[in-house]
Length: 131
Image (cartoon, rainbow, N blue to C red):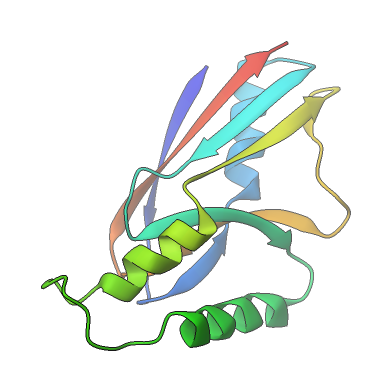
């Protein structure tokens, strides 16, 4: 089963917890055991799994990415080269195991949509299959 979710990001850079969207797709699919793939079809956004208990972790990740990929002189004329680089570092998909109808995530883990060139209207695809 494939679900599409629309997001409207509010900031130039943000990490938005979308764990509930993946869980919703798993529930709608009605499977007990399988896999859940979360995919972001954008070249200036990504998806990652990280801590969702302390908001300072998100702040630290965005700050560290800003140091790794500074604003500077790039050849890409749109002016959003740092966003392209950051999205490549994060990746465009994450796969999570589904067991007993639930996402198998660690106690402190959440799935994050990573915006690097907002605000924008974005999409997230979630594919769930049994197996």
